[in-house]
Amino acid sequence: MPFAVYVLGLGVFCLNTTEIMVAGLIPGMSQDLGVSIAAIGYLVSIFAFGMVIGGPALIVGLSRVPQKRSLIWLLIGFVVGQTIGALAQDYWVLVVARIVTALAASAFFGVGAAVCVRLVGAERRGRAMSVLYGGMMVAQVVGLPVATFIEQHFGWRASFWLVDALAVVCIAAVVALVPAGGNPQTLDFRSEIQAFRNLRLWGAYATNALVIGSVVAGFTYLSPIFTDATHFAPATVPILFGVYGIATVVGNAVVGRFADRYTRPILFGGLIALMLVLAVFALCVEYKAPTVAATVALGLIGLPLNPAMAARVMSVSNEGALVNTVNGSAINIGVVIGPWLGGIGISTGHGLTAPLWIGAAMALCGLLTLIPDLRQHLREPADGNATREPVAVEDARKSS
Image (cartoon, rainbow, N blue to C red; front, side, top):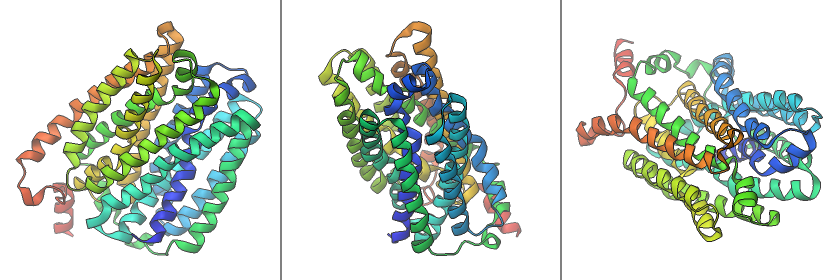
């Protein structure tokens, strides 16, 4: 695996830490800014909303910019937004900061995925995606617990400043280590636009949105669930987040290795397991041992489905930046909906288990969206399933 792929994984770690660390900072941010727990939870949805609206637009806007230069400018934009957030004295200023950082993050995911595929080729794209999205997993095992620990001892702003400094390091790493290439004239936007005529691609987007929405619905509120429902001591929360993060790293490594060959079976079994884990979590939330077990299982099963999700998108489309960025936007629609529904469940008096039940319901819906594609996939010839292109793209290439 080219070292530049790991550099891009570091960038994803930095960007994703900002997205998820709010889950560990909820108590301090709520008290400092004078808003409710649900309002802080909505910051996760706001970040995701910024990724939904910003990623595709920025990819089109950067279509005439070489990929490496795009990555650098996107990271600079992220640093600007993160600085605004660290200095924010008002909730709505923080909302603006979250949108700015989200715009940069979404396009970085799309360009980064396209660069990874360019560097490794189609035969190793699943493993490359596991490295890229491995940055998300490491954010769970390192970024979130560290940010939570820092918040408990130095305040939530210190966590923001730490990520800001790491983003500057990422800029230097991209400048020094990511090879140039993938210039605008080599990007076939005609094929990418044609890919969106494929209904199977939209089915993959729908499944991905529901998978991640299911996970994030419960994950966003884990900190108050641990302390107020299961009655763990606050000092234990960073440890629990660390355990969750380790589980995501292990799960991602396993799924990444088999994502190309067993894409749909992994998604099918993973969705069933995710639904059951969230339901058991909600039923046993008052007991510490089952809560720890459910947290580990959620880490093993939830976010590690990302490589399989990405491999499915690429197997029914092309591997361009726009397709991957829209995939990121689709995923973040789930991130918008999950915490938002979870916050509504809490604020309407259904308790801290409401986000877990909502997550289980979203996993069930995701399973239903996968079944038609799974049935069609099983009817395909064995030698044409994983690398088969959508008909619209094939026709476009033949005609050109």
